[in-house]
Image 1 (cartoon, helix red, strand yellow):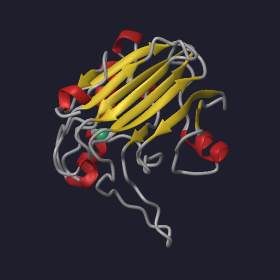
Image 2 (tube, helix red, strand yellow):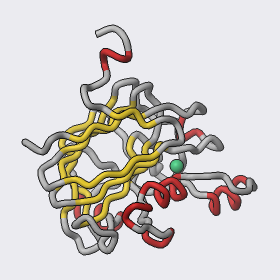
Image 3 (cartoon, helix red, strand yellow):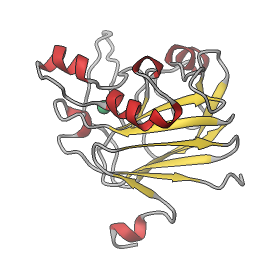
Image 4 (tube, protein in one colour):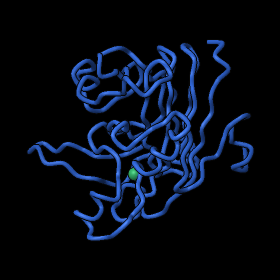
Length: 207
Ligand SMILES: [Zn+2]
């Protein structure tokens, strides 16, 4: 296939730089997120049973998978340790579970900037139809984000290893609300210095 247009999947939504999207998914339905140009992070949060009461929970996900680097077969768990989404497949070797989401408050602390809109602000807006407030937003799973834990225990935000066309595909293990922020962070290397679009495609659920 030649052009970028030809490589895009039928029915795929292009989430523009700094954009966001949210949807309800049925159990068994799948979601494919594509790094269309490479080197772009998407923050993902999930809520159980199509309400905001039970959230995706990072520490349960680390403990029950036994790793901080999720890949095919690993599961996103809720705060009640229920399986929410399984990663069916991914072509990218590195996604992040530990960085959380960028937001105006931490960017004021770490970079000294005021009102720097981040993924948390995007999530609040994306989830407004379900009544989200800031305190409803859990820590996110960050697709294509590269934050290695080094041998001495130190941790850093690095440029993604994802290439154009890399993808990650999830299957919902319960009915959920899922939201993605196309990460607007431009003050560190997490998006390789340029904000780019991401692809978002929900299946019809006939898996
Ligand atoms: Zn972000």
